[in-house]
Image 1 (cartoon, rainbow, N blue to C red):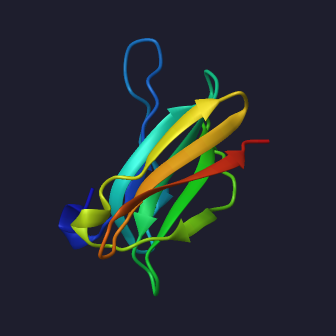
Image 2: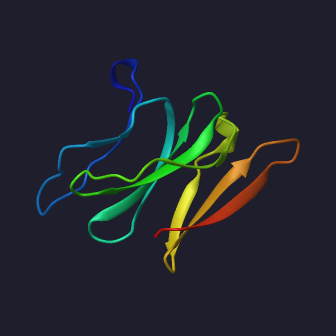
Image 3: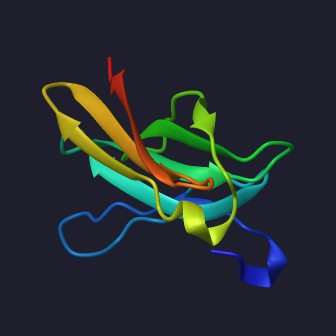
Length: 116
């Protein structure tokens, strides 16, 4: 969201009937294009493109109570729309990230990250 011109990455978990209050994942300089993967009933990994000094794919774990891991940087990425929306998938206790690397010939890149 970028309400009032201040971009933020937020997540809200659903309890049995309603959504909990949103948890701010990042409010420093996110561009957006987020993704989320549930690791179990209580823990998710959220990724986004950060537009700080160098644009990067960043991610962090968050639980339903609001506790979060540090922010991890995955790789640098172009902030242009051609870089698309980076994707995450969970498989066998690892996260697989995929994103578009722009250039004369654009390429799909992937990286595997352990979630422990």
